[in-house]
Every structure is written in C-alpha cells, then in structure tokens.
Amino acid sequence: MSSVVVVGEVDGNEVKDVSQQVAAVAAGMGDVVGIVMGKNIAEAAMKLSTSKIIIAEDDTLENYDPVRFSSIVTQVVEQTNATRVLMGATTMGKDLGPRLAAELNWGYLGDCLEAGDEGFVRPNYAGKVLAKSNPTNPVVVSIRNNAYPAGESWSGTVENFSGNIPDSNLTTASIEKIGAGTVELTEANIVVSGGRGLESPENYEEHIRPLANALGAAAGASRAIVDAGWVPHSHQVGQTGKTVTPDLYLAIGISGAIQHLGGMSGSKFIVAINKDAEAPIFKVADYGIIGDLFEIVPVLKSKLDN
Ligand SMILES: Cc1cc2nc3c(=O)[nH]c(=O)nc-3n(C[C@H](O)[C@H](O)[C@H](O)COP(=O)(O)OP(=O)(O)OC[C@H]3O[C@@H](n4cnc5c(N)ncnc54)[C@H](O)[C@@H]3O)c2cc1C
Image 1 (cartoon, protein in one colour):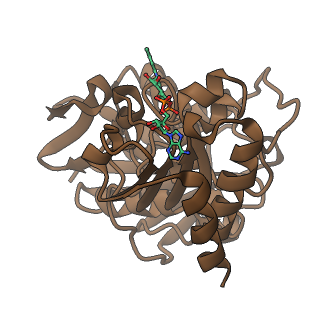
Image 2: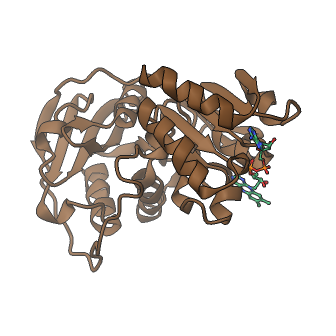
Image 3: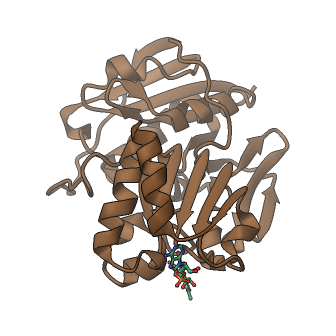
C-alpha cells in the first residue's frame, strides 16, 4: 500500500478542522503519516487523526517559513516513500503546496473539491469548469475547507521528526492580525460579505463587522469595495481574491458578478440581501431577501443579540 503524508496545521490547542478533513480523506488512500510543524504544538499535534504522527517542534518553526517547512516535509516524504502529500488549501497550504511540488519534482493539484482513489476534482475558470485528474505520478494536493467531514480527533503513534531543520535566510518581521478577532476567511464556517450597496466604509464597519462578530463569522468583501479602499485586499472574495467554502455565506449589497461568484459559489448555503430583484446573486442564493440592507441588517443583528 502506498504512503500518504498529511501536513497538519494547529491553531492554539487544536488541530485545524481543515487538517482533520484532509486526514479523513487520506485515510482511504493508503498508510497515512501526519506531519505537524511549529513551536509548542506537540499537545495539539497529537490530535491529528492519522495513524502515525511526526512532530517537528522547534523555536525556528514558530512562524511558517517556506524554506524550513518544505524541507521538513520533503524529508518525511523520503523517509516514508510517500507518493501523495495532502494539505488544506489554507493560506499556508497554498504557499507550501506548490513549493513542495517543485522541490520534490512532483505534480501539484491545488484547491481540490474532491479527492480519492478515483482521482481529484478541482475548479477551473472561476468555477465554471470542474476538471478531474487521476495522476499516476506522485502529486502534492491541497483540499478546500469543508469539502469533507473532519476525521475524529484521536492519537496515533507519535514520533519526533528525526531529520534536519535547515537554516533559512527568511525572518518574520511582524505579524499583523487584520481586524483583530476575525476568523480567517478561507477557514470560516460562516462568512458575512459586504459590497458597494453599503455606500461607505463607515457602513461596512457599522453593519458587516458587528454582524460577522455576532455570528462568529469572517468578514468578507467584494472587489468593488476593496478597490475603493474601504477594506484591505485580505477581505476580498472572488476570482482575484480568496475562495471560500463556508456552511453559510451572506452576501449583503453585492450584485453577484461572475468574478465574485467564482470565489463563493461553493458555499453550502448562500443568503443574499439586495434591493434589486434582478441581481445575479439571487441565481446562486438558497435564500434571497429583496430589500434595503439598511433596514434588514439591523433587524437581523438585533434578533441575533436577543
Ligand atoms: C479580472 C477581474 C477580476 C475580478 N475579481 C473580482 C473578485 O475577485 N471579487 C469580486 O467581488 N469582484 C471581482 N471583480 C469585479 C466584479 O466584476 C464586480 O465589479 C464586483 O464584484 C462588484 O462589486 P459589488 O457587487 O460590491 O458592486 P455592484 O456590482 O455595484 O453591486 C452593488 C449591489 O448592491 C445593491 N444595493 C445597493 N444599495 C443597496 C441597499 N441599500 N440594500 C441592498 N442592496 C443594495 C445593488 O442592487 C447592487 O446589486 C473582478 C473584475 C475583473 C474584470
């Protein structure tokens, strides 16, 4: 049976949901070895649901470092003779995956929606085409959040990483948490996004962020308001922004241009609030509220507060 390496990520004391989802997918593909890298992550790393877990813990691994992380995973691949590496299509996964594929001289399939013995399915052309690949050669794969249910948290056999952690000339100068307390967009179970219908950046702060906070959601945006400088690019959902696949996506004052849909149409439930009944967002929405967001959002927020 071939070996599969799963790159796990931790958040505080827990393994990220997306990593448990990836571990569950990998379980059907062969002998699964998890690798978790970081500083003070051992306790959380042991919860990764793979039958064997390798922990690379070191002060130099406190922040994601592409040189060190890709070298460690490469060494684990060589030690285990793996032919697949799977990880979440997180901010880290989207950087690490292609680097690792280049280092290993393997193929790369990013942002997959389906993965299994039958092959991998990933969206092309902003989600208009779903491409199926069944690579016979080794491949690095990143899988979107929420594409699969998470595997149960459990402890497999645990080993410390026995290879070499290389020097790196990269240093993390600073880490800025944009909009303190917000959930990372690509990993959020609920996303509340606002668009040009909000009319001003002040209205985004007054209506979108509090609603997102009340729901424990990440706050997103259309490109129109990112380009207008209302919110940073890190909030942008769409073809040239982030791809999100939450359980619930609220589109507020967003028309639903094809480039926006490309980043959110894979959400499980889409709720749109728009005063224009003809807005294209209603074509993908599961629930649509035709009306003025300035009347509807405060009512929604007060219901949640109660
Ligand atoms: C190459 C390229 C890449 C792009 N990438 C992206 C991308 O990644 N993400 C993205 O979002 N866009 C992207 N765009 C831009 C995209 O084409 C649209 O211009 C953009 O999504 C529109 O943003 P919007 O829906 O906020 O604004 P608008 O299209 O102006 O829509 C505003 C909506 O708000 C509604 N509205 C107004 N007032 C109210 C009110 N009081 N109550 C309720 N509803 C109200 C209106 O009816 C309207 O439907 C890209 C474009 C190009 C060309």
